[in-house]
Length: 306
Image (cartoon, one colour):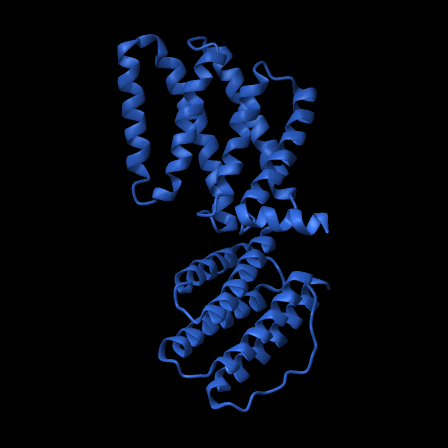
């Protein structure tokens, strides 16, 4: 009971599991980096560990929704952080001119990524960490800066392999977005209003976006089918409510079926209750979609547990 209440409380603040994923990964990387620090003992351990880990956490942001893109983003981050630290360390003694160097380099980075504003967070992190490094790295001492950068590269390689060995939890993002959309669909029926329509659209958009992260799972095709079927439900209910094409009793039947499906998703288990077809003409579309939804979910559960 306590765990259920705790999970429900966390869901209110982290409805799509992104925060929990980043938190778990940060803790996992911290343990791995502390072990690496005990063995390798870099001269500025805090900075080296911070430089190598931040890029992976940025790669877990919702806007980066492709596995290859996450890897490439981290590679780009490592290159940029090493270049920026080297440039700032070499020019920090120029005093007033250093401000121009920082401004010019910042402009170049932001301008280069002007067509990908979702990566601006990466540039901001690189610039901030590089300025912080001026307090910890012996700026102006070529060999000490170079030594620090070699340690950054070494720790970055460790972080990359830790990232690749981290269990895939991206299915939790998809599952959470599906649960949120099912909850909102039922509330939409209860309210007999379209005010929640935009909310459902955003929830299903998260589910659609997370599908790219499931490409290596054997149930990726079924996950896409379920997302598409729920999208059909959204438009179908919009039409019924907006045009008042059906009575409240028939809508309640849809809500009951969706609640049954939501319970199965929460339990992450198949449900094999025989579907009772509704005779009402307005529910003909429901009679087509719901059995497909049930069949596809059951198939996904079999594949996920195989």
